[in-house]
Length: 153
Image (cartoon, rainbow, N blue to C red; front, side, top):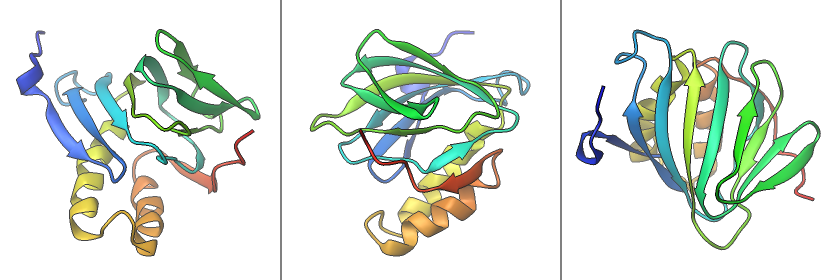
């Protein structure tokens, strides 16, 4: 398989965007791969995936990942695995954009990003209802929301 930059599907996610390079349809449900750009202030809830194991590799900026009951600041060149069934969150606490590659095994969660893009086109990400709707939406894609992100450091 060869995927060129112009073949990526781009999805907005409020404070950032996803470039889906390979989705589950292309891998017969085995895995997915994306490039993410998350703007300053981006954060996820504390959540877990019962089936999906995720991996991230930081390209630019600092990606903060909450794992094993503490925040870890991942600098460029850092790889992290987010095991299935383990609570985690991620955020960009820095003043610069963060770019990273993300992948998941098996596929399925990758379908959240086009759905989020549709939501972001209907409800502005700054709207108080946006976060509420994201929590409802993400629960349809192997995600259990456990609560707000833990306090940062």
